[in-house]
Image (tube, rainbow, N blue to C red; front, top):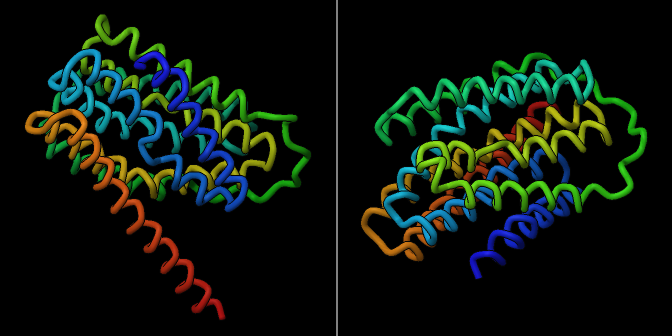
Length: 260
């Protein structure tokens, strides 16, 4: 059962987000992809295999890894005009360096949450001018299997290596930017730099719910059963995610009203 969870759940969730993004555009795709659809199942498998205490520590470090994702996003946005390969290389290098720094930093859960919220507020300001929209030159024949494969490989790698990595590094690695790398990379190739940067902006809006998920999960795994902890953490994240969606819609309506 655990093997099937690792093998099928993450790719299936990635497929659902990809299809939703193709229907509703980059901001919605980014907003949806920031929900804990990759890290959540990985943390669940860690809890089932390594125990609730292990997963509680991993969840706290997954929260801190949001800061590395924000550095990844800023680096990609600022290099997007240079083309997808260069932007992706710069973003992954920036992410790796940030993870190295985070390994040496230990913050209480509450302080980590405040640091992540501050990062979420500042990161969009560091993106720089938005790239101009580029003509679409055609999409890859079918990128969905590659996206699903990336999610499956990440889930399998982290959970199998968890015993040797330890909870801290497992938590950081659970937040490896598989969604950002796959979705943004393919979107950049298919629809241009402007689309890719808009996708990253949508992701940043969604990471508020992700942060709430990590904090709630880390706290509840010390008090509740694994199933109840994940159920309540997912519910809390969903409430915040819907609130953010409402706020995004209200901001767009106000912007259109001011323009008119």
